[in-house]
Image (cartoon, rainbow, N blue to C red; front, side):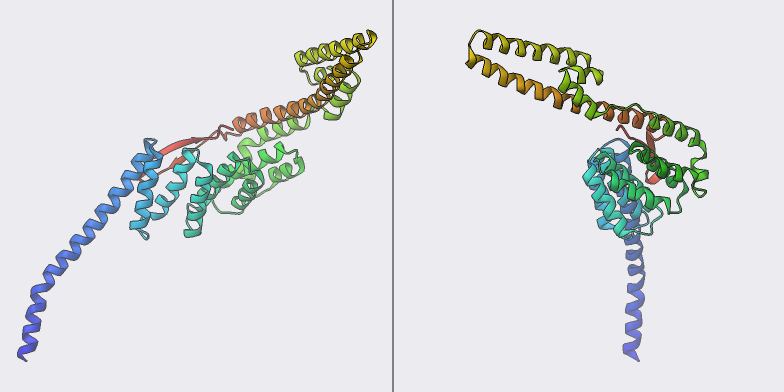
Length: 309
């Protein structure tokens, strides 16, 4: 009986101290969590992206089940995106989506990963992600993904697929404001006057410089015509004067210029067509209001990410 009383007294004396210690630890935990989270967000807002990433990684390590861990984990990818580190951004978003596949931020992370893939030129992978977003619940992200997907389809002359998305009843509310612009882009792309590489090459083979004129590169055409004419005339004079060695050398040079002119005309036609596609693509970004997107941060901080393609 005496032993029981002593044990009860000891427990009574120790219990308040333990409660105070637990309360202090809890307060310190909350204070530290808030401090690191806010500091990371402030660094992001001021453009110090690499320092923001360091603090965000510290937060995720110290508070793997913290109240804002999902937001901070996504911030790592956003910081890489803002600093134009496309590969690192993709890796960070992949890590986020692996850790938090059911997060309400998963749609935004997938969308920004698709943008990073576009910046790297991985159009097919970006399209796959845009299509994945179109089957998701986030209406805002779905509207953005639909506009990007349609623009990419138009860029690749996949008109039937673009028109099919435009007519999709599930996407119609998200595309209603941009329907007119999309129809204009489709009309312009269908009516674009491209140059034929085959025609450019044949013209240059018949008359050096004419392929460049066909490509509307008039200065190059004049240069090619006179250069080839000069070598042909010089080779003729050499042969006519009996200087066959010099004539042979000049003929070899002329064959090089002549062949180069043909290849240059073919390449010029391809370049002309790429420029048309690039101009229409950039116009599409502007018309469909895809030039920038706000990226929200913990604590209400946000920045604008632009897409300068």
